[in-house]
Image (cartoon, rainbow, N blue to C red):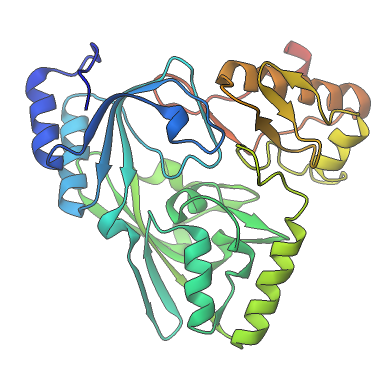
Length: 322
């Protein structure tokens, strides 16, 4: 642990945070160490939280003191500001990594990796999560972004999501109040932190489930899994060819800004060739978007999430204004 810079959090509040988390706190921690793409400035205060009681206390403390609080997950589709993130950044583990399965009903913590949950479901001979094999990221992030592949998604399986509110109190939202669409949901607006997710899976043959998982894995072989990346940059536009195909037809493979490069293997991925900044990544993303708009008149929407220094999701400007 290093000494903290001036982060707007009083010494008294910091002492409370340290007490809640038994010292599991890092100051000025480079977010490049906690994002798949390897970019992002320092987190003022980064906390690893493994107990529900500690998380409730931390959320309540942040709420009372007007301190921004952001859960990071595994950072698989996130581009944090180069200025870093103010306030408190939370990474969940411990209790939030538990999986409970009974008669096809699954309840899993927000920190459970999607790929781990898919493997566990296969062992239990439960079908529905085969598409999640190989998807980086956690279940919490997966329901917020409605992670999916091949026309299947997490949202189609969810029956209930557990949250904490601004005061750190737990509550649940049932299927009827949840709204899922392509790579999006209303989960981010419903509560402060996702704590757990319940879903219903169908009984299936372990052999058939494994075969389907292998099929999804084979389809990912053209993705640049050997270099730091944030997954697909753009959503596939409705009524048009996939984003990767449009980008490829614009001849963008290999295009670079700083240390970031459009993957020569798959044009809807950008890879960090070493020490890249979020500013360079965003500049490259804007160039990709402009080229597709100029050639095809299609406005690509980002699948990757960009965060400003306050932890707020920020959209890209429209192509005509870039």
